[in-house]
Image (cartoon, rainbow, N blue to C red):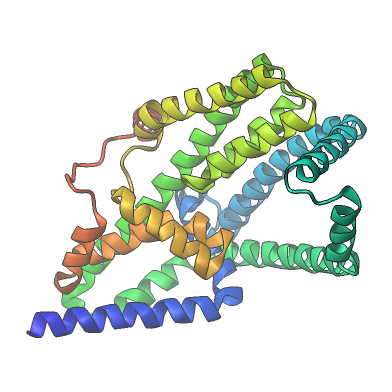
Length: 360
């Protein structure tokens, strides 16, 4: 009975926590994103410090490298988007033709005349263009502000990580310091390995999608390859979204059925290689979560924090599992989140190369 009461109280605490996460989203999203990203750069910061740099300088160097990497990706997308813009007139004409065909089909099938359809469309969009522009401008400003906040938080987390660790150790009795240190270390390690492995996998996906889309004949193939690769940060949903957008672009470009089939074949081939080769070899089994809770975490993350929640769901759930595994009254939840047949995490290719370079 005591165990049941403890489980009910724990579940009630989870419900309250998710309620707090939802209402505090504007504050917590950039803070959590910065915390997770800063864990990825701890090893690099330690490397700079071993070379004689101060912690503040090492942290700043990590932030600058991160900004440079993101800037290169944005520049590549901008170049490809400029190439895509050259074909916008032709794509617009094809889309207008497709809409006219759809209106004709509705007229013949349902009996709604084209004039009535156009009137309904105009009434539905009347007065909304100004609101859409204002909403877009507001959203863009919010993204810029949050980006600056994330970078500032990352710098502070990296430069103050020793202070934060000491604070966490002061929250527990001295006899539990060793266990708490191990939990902190493993939680950071999960984030480091998952995100660094994911970044390497996205780079490989860019190459595979780029080759596949170029063979099929998709215009601005590199743009859609980069887009599909970047959307992989959202498991399960991102790859479907990227491929769907590519198919729509092919249709708008006037591509025939063979080109659409080619895009779909590329998608299924890349997904096969990703599932059975890339993820086990490059990323490794680092998060150790079963598929049911992975999907549930992504859905719940989207409900609570939107797209940011979908991106952060998997690494955060992996950290939560480590915490559950190290505390007896939470171990049942760690068992539930974990895989049905738990296995020891495999060493990824990234870990292998790190060991090789460390020896040299």
